Image (cartoon, rainbow, N blue to C red; front, side, top):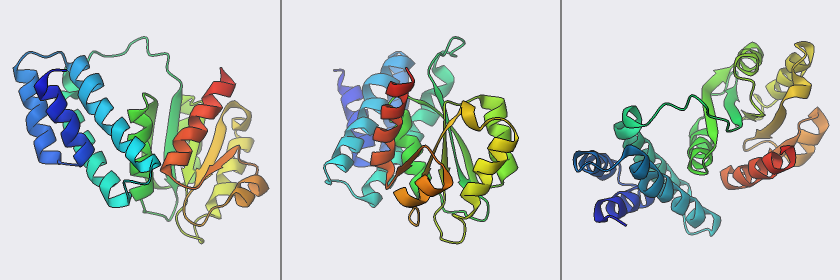
Amino acid sequence: MNELLTELKNAVVEGHAERATDLAERCLATGLPATMIFDEAIIAGIREAGTLWDCNRYRVPDMILSADAFNAAVAVIERHLPVRHDDTRPKLVIGVVEGDVHDLGKNILVTMLRGAGLDVLDLGVDLSASAFVGAVQRERPVILGIGAYMSSTMLAVPEILQALEEAGLRSSVKVIVGGVPTTQHFADEIGADGWARDASSAVHLVQQMLGQIK
């Protein structure tokens, strides 16, 4: 592999955002294709960070730094990437429920899913049931991820499922839930299609679901 690509990959793995920015710019300046930089350095780096997470060698602070470095590098090259007019990848939509502004877990998950090559739309935080319904109507995702990080806000999750049902959309999308106060029992009780205890298990769950859908 090109030395600059290796250095950029390592910067993402090790969570050095400023270095990742500089190296991404240098890669472009030397004429390396943006797609090569993205696939062989940036994506490869966040995947390696995810592997370290799976092996319990990385903790939340490590993943935050890697995610920041990943996003910094992507910001440099994204305008140079070809527009996907024929993108047939299944889409995922992810957001956090109304009244909840905790985004750490969501941000790590979104980064890891994108690192796995998936098309992910991050809706953000503090989202009403109608916001989730509108996103499903517009984007037609295969999977909708709903995050709730407080016991008081997790009660909004069944309201979102009910709103999807009333809009005639529930059967068109798989719904997974996650967040500190949620459990498998909670997910089963409200009729969600899946639950994940953390970002790593959520990635595996999504991949398993996509395999079943195919």
